Length: 309
Image (cartoon, rainbow, N blue to C red; front, side, top):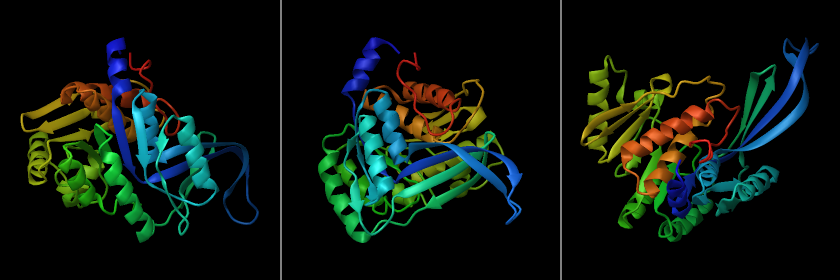
């Protein structure tokens, strides 16, 4: 990326809102089966902790040099404090709401011989009081952002998503949503939705051909009054559906090591480029390149502007 683009990116201001989580990885080796049950015994030799969910989106945005603020909910616990520390190290302005009634969402993965043996999830939906307080802060934070990213992992932090889109629209902000679930009506009026194939299939059903996909995607986009729908298609690249029609970019050919968090990198990169006033198709091409780089790294990872050159 040219110096001019990096300067544009450093002026971009983004607000990331959504489900914040901590990704924990326990690495070890396994040589025997437990005498207590037919399960492998893992001798843990290394532990790693990374930002997950909306926090990983924010980390990706900050890695591209943009001014990044995050709003979400964490628990008053050790995992929540760790999330705050990691955000600070990533250069993200932390506006997280601390909810003493629930734990911080944690995904713990146990990995032996480069294979995930089990994932343990610790999560509870945020309390009503924490969500109400978060919404008050959101109203104040929107005005300082060029683009708002709503990162929905279905954990409850975006319970008022329809109202949040309404408030951001009222201030003429661009709104990007990484959606979850089978009801997209709550995302009505967003600027761009970024589902992957399985997420879109949940909403529009199984398509039988490329023409059928285009029709279903465009019908959905129009019914929700959304400017663009960006479909991420793994090895088939990406497709962008807008009023002008559909355009595609091919996947960047490289070895895929780990796809976890790739969607976070894609929406983060797309948002930074749009905040820097890039046209949608050019922003999609950059996001596609970033996604191609990040799947070559283990776990949730980021891409820097230098790597995108």
